[in-house]
Each structure stands twice: as structure tokens, then as C-alpha cells.
Length: 237
Image 1 (cartoon, rainbow, N blue to C red):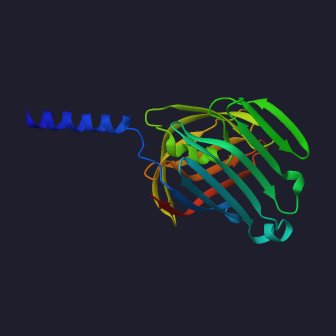
Image 2 (image 1 turned 45 degrees about the vertical axis):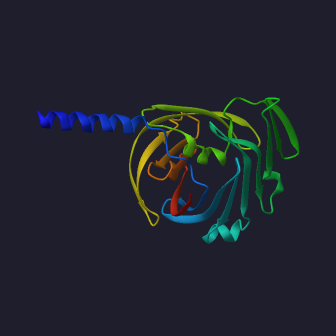
């Protein structure tokens, strides 16, 4: 009889854990990633997330490595800032800049009151309706900190890169553990399940580290593949 009571208690504890909301997101994150083409490191990314009185700031700096640094030495700077709402990150401004190639620069302004998204890229201006929950390409990776994905099988959200607005759909499944110099992480796995002619995105989230991405694979329609892997992680309360 005691064995059945214990088993029931364990099952109840598991059920509660599966439906518990994620712990409060941290006040700061400093993450370093590398980008690999095959087994060759071609770039490193330094990202900083800061929370301050209901607002957030995100910066990402990518620096080329090896031969890429010889032929394309310019750094890439990505910035996002906005409000932290009960639903998570709510971007107000986003920018993308590439050293030595201003034609690649893009900028987005989010007017939530007017429900308008203003995009600027290569001298062109575009104004679009702003869907609820829209993220930019940088805030999207940190919005996972605010989502309770336990028991969820799909995830949908709009995202802009400053030049256009796309809608993303992912399936969610248990992921295999990820090992790196940053540690060993149990993961959730997200897959965009791209159709023919589309770019496929695969994301592994570190479940014990606020669902922060620890690995990403981007596969273009021609089969070219880039892998982004976490190498160091510092989280501040």
C-alpha cells in the first residue's frame, strides 16, 4: 500500500513540474557562440542581455574568424531594445549593421499603440501592420526565457529582420543533450520543418538555463548549413 502511495506522489510531483511556469527570467545574460561551417569555426558572436526597470537591451557582435576574417573582415552589430511585458519581450527598436557594407543595414521601429511596424533597408521604407507578439531576429532568441513550453507541441510567432516580416512555425520535441565548453545541457528541440525551397531552422534550448539557445542549425534551400554553438554562458540574477 505504501508503494502505491509513493508512486502516486511521484506522479503528482511530475505532473506539477510539467505545468509549472518557468522561473523568473534573469537580470542579465552574457553568452558567447561560435559559428561553424562543417567543422571549421568561421565567426564568433558575443551577446549581452540586460534588464533594467521593466525595459531590456540586447546587443550582439559577430566577428569573423580565419579566412573569413581575411576576405570579409567587417563585424556585424545587432541591437534590440524594448519593454518587458507580462508576455515577455516587446521590442521598440531593432537595428542591424555590417561594417563596410551599409547596403546591408536595416532598422525597425515598433509602434505598439498604432499597431504599425516601420522597416528601413537599403534606402527603402516599408510600413506594415504590427501583429501581436512580433519579435525581431535578436529578441526572438531571448523571448524563450519567458515562455512555458512544457507540454507544448508547436510554437508560432511573427519575426522581422528589419527588411521584412515573416511568420515562423516550429514543432517542439524533447532534444538530445548538448555538450560544450559551457557545460552539458538538457534541451528542448524546435524545428521549422521547412518545405522545399525554404530555409530550415533547428534550435536546441537549454531547459535548465531559462530556455536560452545552446545550439542552432540553419540550412538554406541549396543544402548549405551553418551551425551556431554556445561556448560560454554567464547568467546574472
